[in-house]
Image 1: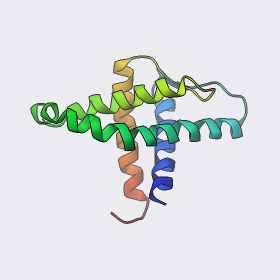
Image 2: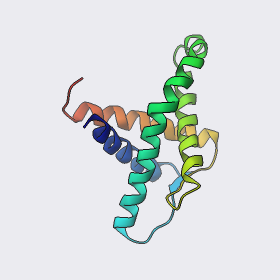
Image 3: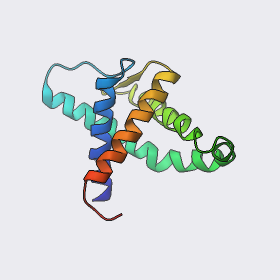
Image 4: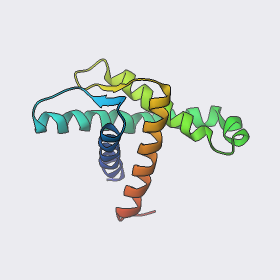
Length: 125
């Protein structure tokens, strides 16, 4: 159940990110059900990347987290977003991220949106 909630939260956060940041977009589709499926696939890949790859990257970059007082968090978010874009580029449901600084802004928006949505959604903390 927690995975499903995180999947929905990530999907909404990615959707907001594609609306607010010009350099981040989903593959063009014409109908709404296909757009929702595309968003669900990208959110699933992003959630799996955050569950599998992110802990390893955080552990390996722990000295940089300490040195930058946590600001390296933005770089890790950007890298996870870029990795998601790279993985989904091999499918028809692609997320396009134009560059590193675009990914940093997108990662920041996704982090804030996910945090706000997790505050609103009731559940065990």
